[in-house]
Length: 502
Image (cartoon, rainbow, N blue to C red; front, side):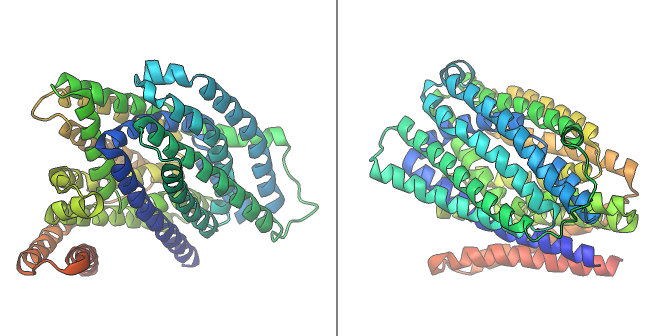
């Protein structure tokens, strides 16, 4: 019970932290929308997947690998070995990530011209190249805190980093009086790099304070550095290949969308606007509840590793069921909110009520997105890296095919992105569940799933009536009541029905 409570506590801490960061991301996207417009947001979105690709190359799979290895040493009270893992990993990543950052910096013009095919992104690529070093090193320190069940430390630092980034963006735009779209987008990525640097500094200080409190045994036998690095890399390698290949395919997916939209009959500028509104705004709103899913997935890896090491298979199965239920509940509640007040959400956050159809469409993909993300975290915790690689590659290939086909059709265009998300996440969930069932006994009651859907429909009807009979209230109180009431009511009714059915 203590371990279960610890897991839920850590998930809650990360959820609160990520919720705060989610708010900051909303503020961030609102600032970008106001300063850049929809086209600028689309231009910003073209650079990010390329940056993510190189981050994957630098440290893909590192967090899962170190937190898993660290959790084993921590559970065995081998604290000296735990610190050795961190030290060896830092040495390796410092060399590796620096080589990548230097390569990107001097290849920025080539990447902007021939890969992104928009020369306006060259300066942004140069500015984010140092951030790769900072992110890679930060990942190691975060993994250390995850492995010792101290998620609160990186959580607080992440909040601070997001605040610094927002203030840096506002300051650079206002002080430098930036008006040009290229310069403004570059300033955003410059602020991004500065925020990651500050985050790394705080993580280093926190790590140094934390390791002093560990009761290290001077006579503890530890493995040599080469063996420790090998152990980390052997777990990291398939995850790195997975994230790298998935990121390559994901980058291809992102870069293919504007070209296919142009082929459907819209201008390049309009294509960037559609991308900015659909992916940068609508999906930002509907993915907000996924903050909880991402927090949970981060902690599932060390948690499941502990349960397997201690042979607590009952707790292992219970944890998996809890994770899947939470993901599904959040997804259904998101559909209800996105269907009830899409216009209000677009207006409040971006002053763009016309993106309401995008929000409503994106909301219907939420349950599958949340479930597929959770199942990937479960597979990682169960040590099924090869299956993660295979399923991710299948998912990415199918996504490219869907985007290539659907975004080219004039009457579908940008909705093809949403169709691709729905198809690929559904496929990923099915493939992942098949693999999970090979490891643990997992019984999914489709009767219960149907009942949970009916509860979602009931919640929609209740708050739909509320939305129609209650007039608009100041300070968006009505919208807040609908959002909070929907999630609380759905979770309460679902919990009661679960108790009744069990």
